[in-house]
Length: 440
Image 1 (spheres, rainbow, N blue to C red):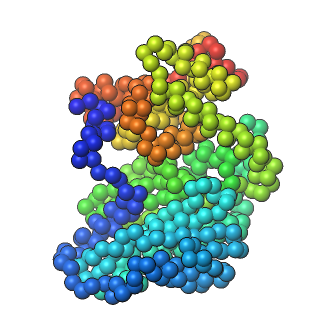
Image 2: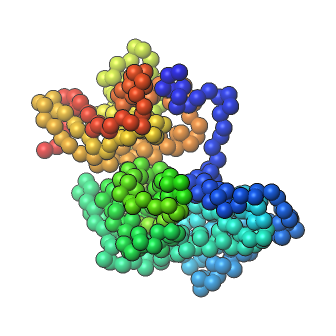
Image 3: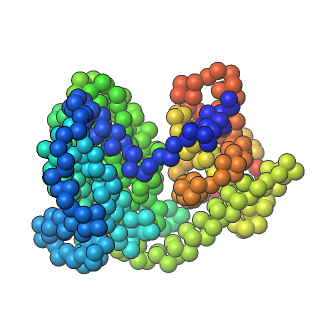
């Protein structure tokens, strides 16, 4: 079996991964299995008399009452809550309801929408437990976590109640921007000694990586989750605007390795929101929109070129074809270097990659940098993830992977019997051609 087969497997017996099957659900399930040895079902759920047709309304009413306690005007249109003061809405859906011994475990998906959050909105999913089959208690438990960890910091960000001490400054391509930082309350369990490091601990840990990702959006939101199970297994997750934040996860990986060994469960979760200041956002918005949309179109075009190349196509031919569309040969070369690499890094996630890039110029000079120093890489990450989420065909993915030098190297090592997880990360080398322009 080749590397591609190991990665994707055969269609036979392949299970679909549900969005709600994230790290928190595994944590909750592991914890409940440990705490509830007797999984025999007992009584019916207390609130089972709530009809399915009324379930959404019942859930929204509970959520409305809880959000109203934050001294906000809250309306409900039957589909979502509307909070006029911050021009936002909240959707909630009860996804799972299962028995755990004498208790009921539920999972609720939440979606916070605001026009400045973009099309995706802020998505989160939480599990809650109701003792003695109390469904309402389980729902309130989910909502409590949602409000404390997510909604409170979202409200602060939308109201722009920021602390100037946490402001960030960036200057990319001559455009200076100011960013306001909002650090949500750290939710922790079994980590009292770690909590002493302060509420801004994860923000300070990830700040260098966060600054690199700040481009031209109005809002960026980061979710941090680290956990250690009773058996010592360590898990972590970091998302940026609902998508895997691989660079930050590598920082978390190093952080987790330095933690003292422990025997009990340890869970820490936090949301961090970054908002571009009104001044820099308004001054540059229209220009940002036009440029970003064009760059995304260029990345999508490059992917279509890579997915349909033939044996007669040379590297220079592919790049020139992309350059005809981008009107910029540098952008074309960078898409050629980065897009196949992103497919490789996203698909082969167990490998230890590095963010370091070494560009070798024709005169043998070397330029050292990081992947997120390149705007094309930032744009391409979003476009590639979107394509994969849209169930891009396996054939197209395989063709693009074969353009990745990293994939070719990994494929060779697997054939030689190497374990992907044990491979040492090396910098990404880019051999710049003569027509690639580097500013001094």
